[in-house]
Length: 228
Image (cartoon, rainbow, N blue to C red):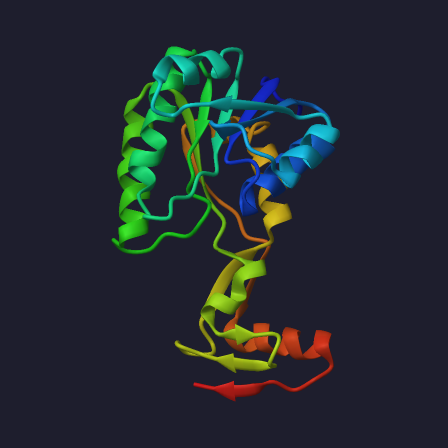
């Protein structure tokens, strides 16, 4: 099924996740892709790479609503992959949402791309912003993809030193998705009628901690030192 959307703007498109989502859209070839970066303009290798593949790099001052509105005009879908060093994803995305409404953007995909957990400094900001998106009147899709496979080190897998530390039951199942697959899944949501105004859950694979450890050992050909 083809998409009704033509122009996609990715806020944070030179970040870890944003770059992979931008690459997926460019590789798909069905969309005009804009990468929204914050002013002032600075040299960025990822921005150069995306521009060489056909993306338009645009800049805006997030504190100037008119500036944001201007660069968002003509955008059908805005995908926020913004992150914040202070973990305040509510404040960092709010100007983007206000400008998107004024620019008549059709759909907003907020910077969720994680997993459902309890209240935390990071997730609390995400939840508050999701509520604002839902109330905004814009179409929305909120994507949960579990943990990023590239960052399994955060939960105890030390690939360099061949060590694994479990902080939970080794039989606990975890949903994980690679960054590149998150990009592909995001594209698919634009083709799915059921993704309109919905929460979408995807996963590249679901394995237990023990099974992930087995995979690491199979790939490396070495046994890991295990702690629990």
